[in-house]
Length: 162
Image 1 (spheres, rainbow, N blue to C red):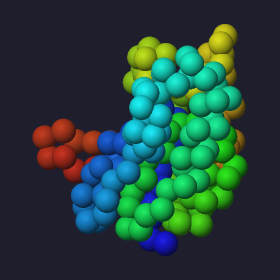
Image 2: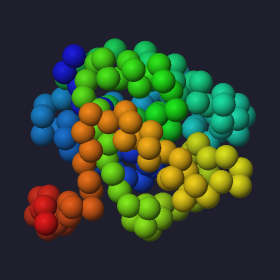
Image 3: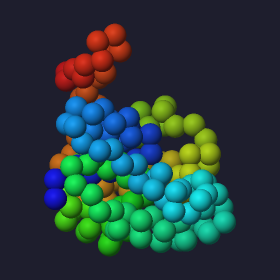
Image 4: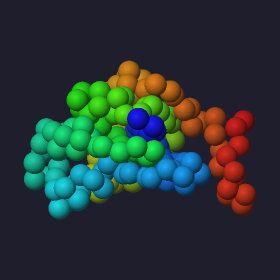
């Protein structure tokens, strides 16, 4: 199928870039976090609080593995790479792009992780999470987009590669 799947850490810009990309390509935009919330009738952080991380990851895996679409840009949640079935399915329906951002930039962008519905274990730091997930993103990516090389110019809204 003809889809673009975006993976990467929370706050790296999957949804923002996904919306712009979909608009420019004439594709549909799908945010898998919103699909999870629609199915569960709960916010992400509520699912994590009520079902635990394992429960949330099972739900996320099931939702992502059932996405059936064409000509879409799909922004996944940062923890999508924990779902083997989902990642296999996403590879079957499109090309997977890892939006890579440095730990330092992520740290600057992110606020309270619990309010974002980030799948993080108690006592785990953002750096721990980054180091745990980075190899998974690289494993599942067909393409890596290093966002440190891209700068958005606000007045013109054009990406400039330096």
